Length: 419
Ligand code: ZN
Image (cartoon, rainbow, N blue to C red; front, side, top):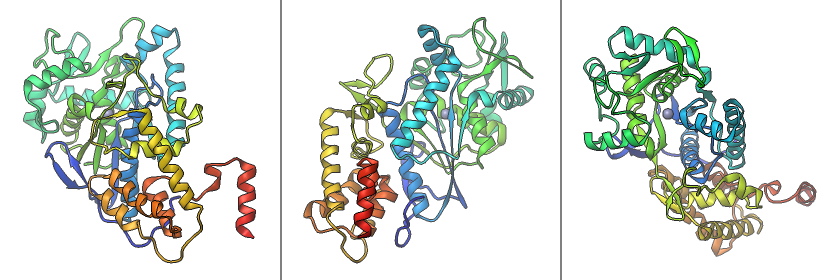
């Protein structure tokens, strides 16, 4: 439960990738949010944390504006990178996925990220995906090559409100480059268009597969998200979100599949977060430069400092994780904590409107943090409403002694508080 705040926040405006402008993320009744989840083979690194903290901020703004939120996230628990990692380490792919999924959820909880209403695993949706692909085949919007099945971009554009480039706004040479780089197969003989994405991969020796109306196989990635969004949320979504490396091909084709299947757009607004680098390069398993949330927590770093370090960067920027950045966040947390324990002043919050104003303008968390810095540095004691605002909108709990101290200390604090 988030603390109640005085008054009501405005509807947030956030950057929409297709139109390249800030749009009001105004829910029709209930806010529908779908954020692409992880492939569970590398435990939560700061790049993941940054993406999910950004959409956590958006959820907090919707709640503050008086909306209910329905939030769904998938888990791509059967996919090439996961299978490759499992094979390379001699672990069963199911155990690897289960273990990494669990670690991810624990990390998110530690970071104060409000969990989705539904985490949906790809392996729970095999039948629904196969049925959807069957419908596309029947309508001539999909075609087989051997027993694999591809989405026909041209046929989809002719029969639905979607066309190639609608979501990503990219030119064809760029699309071809990204498609090859991010798991696509532009060179495969028999494809009607080099960019046609895979909907269904037929069973291969040594790979997991499921018996379905399409025969044995497993789902492609874009159709997985499209079907999960259709099953669990009303379309169009208020926001479809994810890292900026999902702009193309993933979100483009999730939108294409959805439009072809339902006649509706996937989302009213497509939002993307910047990428996080470490030591000069994008954080990735293959480069071995991951900064893991669990490692930081294990080394004694306060989770609130990790969250503050992430919030000190704008979610759409590409940025670099550094030791200095973490040290600054730790100092900030110490300053804020000292302020929070300096007593209480009467009256209403002096920072609530400043935080709201910053955040509803494209989730401007750096400016929101600065709004807290000013009174925290001046030193006059905070009002209850100040701490409630920091908790509800930024996800940083300064007032709860359990967050920083052991159970004994917390017990003593409570006693003192009563006295
Ligand atoms: Zn997705």
